[in-house]
Image (cartoon, rainbow, N blue to C red; front, side):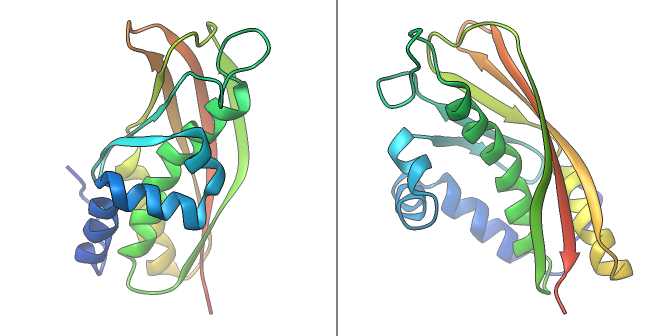
Length: 168
């Protein structure tokens, strides 16, 4: 459970609800993240602490080696951390900019079926946004996400560094 409260938690929850709605998510992707829409990414779970994003294995996401292209995996991985960040920014009650400043990744096995990327760093992301609001200074936070196929095989781990800054 999150211990860091944001000024407008209802706005954060409204964003999370929109992202959990299949039709609303697809419309959002089409308008704001068309490549995610084309690839068929799906938000499987999103609450204040955790986000799960599925990247389907298919012709839109495969590489010539009949596994999921690393860039498609990176897109799902980024969304699993970014949705947590976007929800926190929505709940900030003040304009806050967000930006990925670094990405690191390791790949364990070939993704030969659908993979779900799970990030459980929502509390840390929310705390970084709250710190930005409290101090007026920019903050950064690392958010880790792990991709697994349905059989539990770990295909990749990504670490994204998010930067938050209060807009003037």
